[in-house]
Length: 137
Ligand SMILES: [Zn+2]
Image (tube, rainbow, N blue to C red; front, side, top):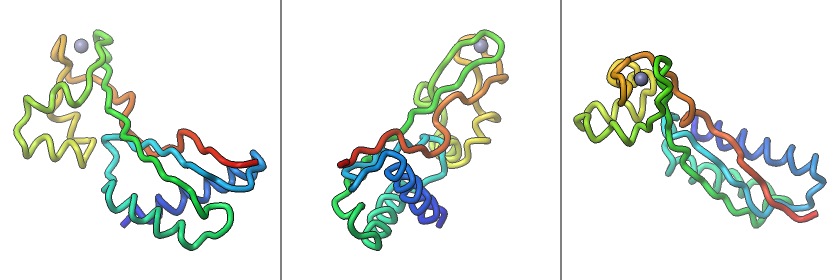
């Protein structure tokens, strides 16, 4: 149920940010969720809307936009960059599901699409961030 804790912290961060920017109300919170993050988007979306109900004034008419941040991997040997979606079609369903929910498994199954090296790093597709908030001053 960490979706709820995450939703709560997103809202608190947005509120802090709105204080810094001296906003009277927040109209829009844009959230980016890494494709490899273990988040159930539906639960997260539901949680954030439920939590918003407990806040009045500033967050009364706030729109929540969730964008999925595509994963990208970089080969440490040849510098090639590829996406999980490039390789997921080569994997069977069980493997691609495991990769979707457990990022670490990626290191076991994946290889550089160019030089086939297993030595790579994840450069995007992780974490949850607020990309922007919009409000009224
Ligand atoms: Zn490579």
